[in-house]
Image (cartoon, rainbow, N blue to C red; front, side):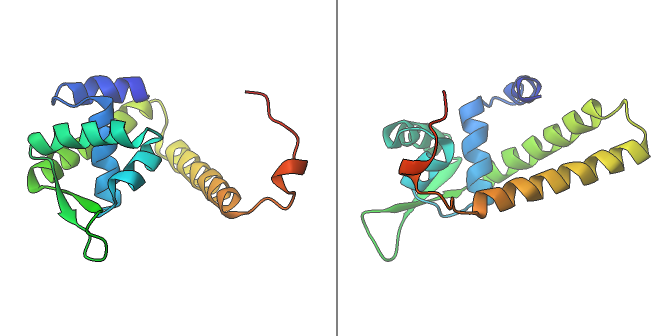
Length: 141
């Protein structure tokens, strides 16, 4: 599904890394470069290069943090919000295409089940392990 989305957004001039940055900043306006790097699971310098390119395209702006002038906060521009809206339309169309083989009842059932799984995953992420890390079994890569 991601490959199909990549192909569709490429038509509007977006790379995967760009749409990932746009979607994170749309959901979390005002995050720092370090926070964005952590969300994207990339090095801070890599995130910095992505931010520089997107700033040159007038898709984001950096604003100084009012409490710490060493930190810049990242915000999407109006131009980027329009691109983000188009990404949303592309995602919606892709989801409709993927679920075209299901009738309305099946779609509702699947959506309900996926919401339950999502809730379960979120609750698992919120829990802290009760066994100290040193005592947990190693997980093979």
